[in-house]
Length: 143
Image (cartoon, rainbow, N blue to C red):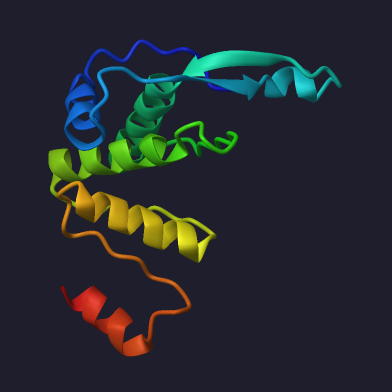
């Protein structure tokens, strides 16, 4: 279970949220308490998208420096999972001038997310999947 952390250093995520999504604040989502599920108790608690985003950024920065933890988030449709991985990707790309790879198992979802980011002004986003020819994949890696 994600713990509530105090990450004051990530103020930029609010400007990214406002710039690309037009919102001033993050939503709260309902999650199962995994510690209790292991004991057979279905307890739900509320956690802000902000906390998840900051945890993803924090662990990514830790991994860059030394090591980081894996983060696995499941949430229902409409909970804002796109925001929860796109904001850390934008933040880390802008801060470190690097490449962020987001892995998704659904081709339709990949296409939707790439189009969404392009419509928001982020032009260098791409998708790689089984529908992309080897020639196109090679062009991607050469850029």
